[in-house]
View 1 (cartoon, rainbow, N blue to C red):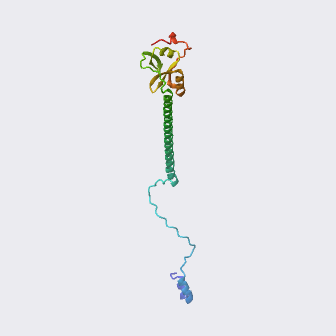
View 2: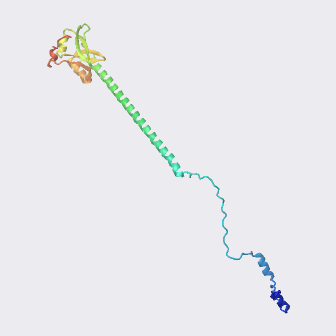
View 3: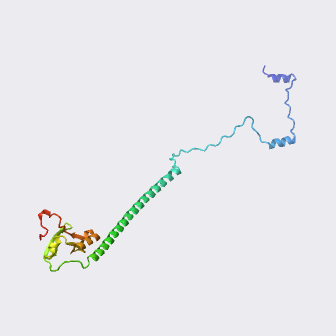
Length: 211
């Protein structure tokens, strides 16, 4: 058969059933349909966030933390402070040592001056040196051989311990034994020669030898 089944049925008097027309919509439904957005059927997925394009940038080393950078200046400042304190302490110690030495030197100089004044007072007018003396009497003093001129009468008395030799302001004075001991009490270095007649003669040299 060339004709389709539908054509045969229409020729036999059967008409194809017509589709029912949709009922007219009410004005309220039309307005609500226009106002409400059209929702797509099916489950909805949230839109994916747009990813920013990543550019190929060279990686840079991370900067050191603030605490690490601050620790270096703090440590350096502390070392500088400690070094400054050490220098200040050394300067203070050296200054105190110099001041102490200066005070000690001034004290010794003051004491020497006082001793010279007392010694000059004790020996004032008591020297027995004779300008006419011609006999030299030698004696050791300050690692050198010194001499003083005496008279023939003074020499045995000097060798016997009745007279003595003292030093005052660079001069050698001939004084009595008592005056020499008084001078020694003031300054031990003032007594230069005081013979002991009871002592043994050194190297068999007689005390009255003039040399």
